[in-house]
Every structure is written in structure tokens, then in C-alpha cells.
Length: 359
Length: 202
Image (tube, rainbow over all chains, first blue to last red; front, side):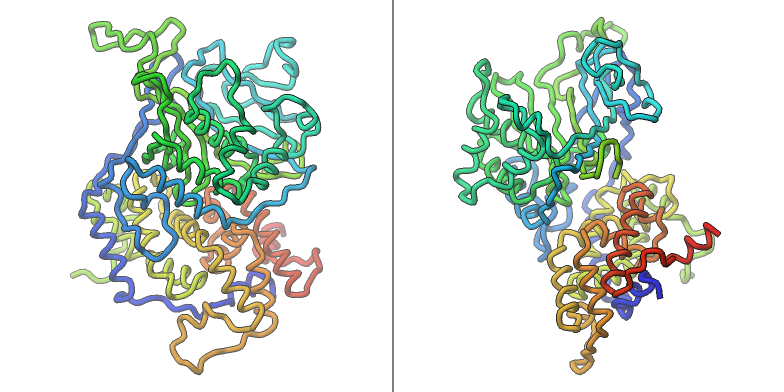
């Protein structure tokens, strides 16, 4: 018999539960329905914002009253069960570390490639700036893509240009082992293999983890970032830059990040419509400073992106025209305080056998 | 008089839409799908885990119900996708149970729903080998294989449940089947095993 049939027979005598067995679960559902489950369907599809118009994106922070379903269930907790949004970032990160640390460690081959698919958004891009993506041989350009002017940059003829703020969906292929990057003396220019290896080699002594990461991503001489900002940025870079998840290293990075003062957790629906838990920290520089947030998947604890929210209105926005309209900057770029003005969301990241192969 | 639902009963998308304003209506979905999901969870993790997996699946679904794509009439793939995610978090438990069966011929998961002390059955060698192969699959491959084999999902339904392309479903299933076939000692790669595929391709 074919193997699917064989698998079908495994544990085929599992029983269907009766009503009494299912009653407690049903009651829990009704309890959460009764405690204010009424919500508006999310209508804002920010991807249809016209170029030049205000693409106001606000982080949909869900209040604690919608956090239903207790955390004491005897099963591994989802990050959604963290107690309340504010002040629990440490708990979120420690829980996330527990969630990921036992995941199987991939063993990528040096000749494999990393395929990533991301959604990128940058409000400061107008029609004349944007994102450069790789041209895949034999494929049509994505919607809205323009050819690059030859000579504008190296490899222009193998690239498309996606103008405007986006969001743009971008696919990228990079070799796991990249001898050119590995040979280079450039401090920040690591191959995926080097980053993956570094994560795997992080010390078991949790106290030593932060120092190693700070040396891996040092502060540049011109930067004025504080030690906490450096720590938040460098640790976050570890899980943003890791080509595919190194779960043991990731857990150590999470635990180190949990100790940084000033981090806050919130529930955020990201630009791709996914429910995430954001760990954010306001940059230094006073009340106008922007907030950097790392987004985690509440079901797996894995990082799924990062975004920045504005600490103040962009220069041209906020001026009224008297008829309810708003002046938009000449170059079409504007945002309000609290808007997400930049985002990189990882939709997919996986190993493939060769360049331009999709999983 | 309420008994069996009338023929024109609301499809899942309608129930979910209405539950946005009247949350208690979501319990209709529970009544429709909880028994199957409970059985599926029990089959993967054992009787003891199934209650919580089932309850948490529906609580999670309820929380995120505004994002359900109402173009889809059936919520079954969506619900199973949520359950698979929760089951995946207990991967070590699942693999331990499968390995125990592979090693000893006794299935602690199957025994969890058998009440009689003397009903322990020793599995055939082939089933034990099968369990070992399923244990060795990646989490993603195992989700695909068991949604097809235990929940009777089509490729498209698996794709919807796990939010992956149909092509990926196909390649993961082929990979899982190949490994199962090898474990069962049949390593003829040219043998047609999917009767549905054979019919489609004539």
C-alpha cells in the first residue's frame, strides 16, 4: 500500500471527544467573547496608499483587555500570554528565548543560498528614490518596477528599481558562504556563514554574550549612540542579520536584550497584517526621538521584522489648509508623530540549493 | 425546534463576520470543528494535551478573527493552521512519543486514550519504523504529511492552513513520503504512490 495510507493507519483509533469533554473549552471561548471581544474589522490597507498622499500608518496597539486566555495552561506559553503590554518586555524576551532555544539547529552547506522575501517600507522615499532589487533571469519585472539607467550603479542592468515608499516586496538571494565578504577587512561586512557561525559560538556564560556582540557590531567613531542604544541596536542586528535562525544563539541574544533598560513590549499588527509582539526602545535625544521596534512572532518567538515609529511629525506634515486638507511636502514625503516611517518585514527566509531558486 | 442545522446554515465566513459584532456567535465554529481538532491534537500529542490545544486554537482564532479572509467559505484550514502552530511548539513531546514507538513498539500516545490496562498492543515492526521516520521529519514536513494523512486535507487546503504555496506543499509531501518509503524498506523511487496524481496525469 502507498505510504500515505500507511500513515493514515497510525493511531487511527484516536477517539472523537464527546460534548462533555469539549464543554470546558467551549466555556473558555464564551468567557472571552463575553469580556469585550467586539472589534472593528481592520480596514486600513496601507498598501493602496497613493504616491504623494499621506500614507498614515499607525501601529495598532491592542489593549490588554483583549488579551484573553490565561497563561497557566500547562503548555508552552505563546508570547501573547505575556502579562500586559507595558513593562513586560523583559518577560516577552525571556519567554521568546525559551520558545526558540530547543528548535532544531540548521546545518547549512557552504554552497547553499539564502532566499529571503521581505516587505520594505520607507516613507522618506519619493518617486525619484526607492529600492533596488535583483532582476531574475527570464522573469517579468514586478509591478511598478522600472529598469535602472545603465551606469547608474554597478550591476544596473541586472537590477530593477522600485520607486517610492512602498511597501515593496523584495526577494533576495545570497550565498551562504561568501568568500569575498569573509576575506574583506571591513568590520561590518559579514557573510551569512560568519553571522550564523558567530551566533552558534556565543558563550554559554550569559554574562559574556553582550560584550561579544558589541565587539561584532561596534559603534562607529562618528556615532553618538549611548551604550544602551548600542546594545539594543547590536543585539537586534544579530537577529535581523542572521540569514536563517540559529536558535541557540538567538536565545542568548534575547536574554541579553532582556536586560537593557527602557525596552517596552506592545502588540502590533504589522504592515503585512500579521499579529506580532514588538519590543521597542526610544532612541536617546529627548521626547522627539524615534522608536525602534523589533517584531516577534508570538506563536514561535522568532523575529519577523523591525520598524521605526516617528517621534515627531515630518517637516511638512501637520499644516492645515483650512478645509480639512493637509499640506503635503513638495516631494510627497510626510508622516505624523507615531506613524511607522520605516519597516522591514521578513515574510520568508530559508535555504535553497542555488541562486534564484525559490522554496 | 433546533436539531440538526438547516440546509441553509451560514458558512464559516458568515459566522466569523457576524462574530465581529456578536462575539458569542463564534461558538458555532467551535461546535463545528472542535471535535475533529481535538482528535487531531490527541493523535499528535496524546489525549492529555488535546483539551488545551483545542481550547487555545479557538481562543487564538477568536482573537484574530478579524483577519480571516472571508473570501474563503471554510475556516477548517485556518483553524488547523493555528492548531498546527500550537502543536509545533510541543515538538519535543511529539518527537519523544514517536521515537518511543519506534524504539519499543509501544505507542505512549495511542495508550493515552486506551482505558483498559491490559489493552497495550505491540505495534508491528513496520509501524514502529514508520513512527521513526515521521519523528525524523522536519516540523514543516510533518505538518504537511499529517494534515494530508490525518485530516484529509487537499494540497490547497494545506497551503491555506500553513500559509505556504501549493508548490511547497507538494515538494514537502514528496520529501516526507520518500523518507517514509525508505524507512519502510521500499526504495523504488519510480513507483507511483499517489493514486490521485496518477489519475490526473492519465
